[in-house]
Picture 1 (spheres, rainbow, N blue to C red):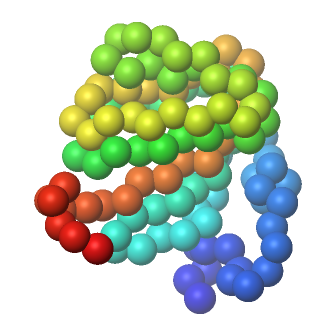
Picture 2 (cartoon, rainbow, N blue to C red):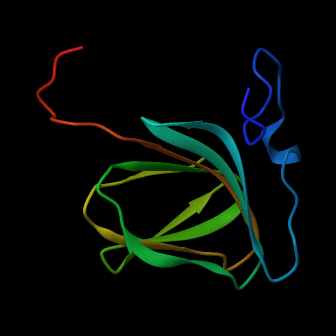
Length: 116
């Protein structure tokens, strides 16, 4: 097991595996593979993730608090339990108008027409 991943075959309370740090963004990897990552992120009030563009779709789900997810300059306000898919190749950033925790998942994929 990678030391950056959570222990496998064990139950985890996701909002408890990461704590808020004043004036900070904190991230904990749940799974890190060459095919994608799953992370839990805690963002303190007033902080934000830098605007970026990813070559892959990203799924974000708020697990505590409320978040503002800006996709191509359009704000989406998510509360606990809400999720959103950020399309590949779109600019986006995440803002904490109040502190919140989220799960961020992206899967690296090739061609859309590959059969599974």
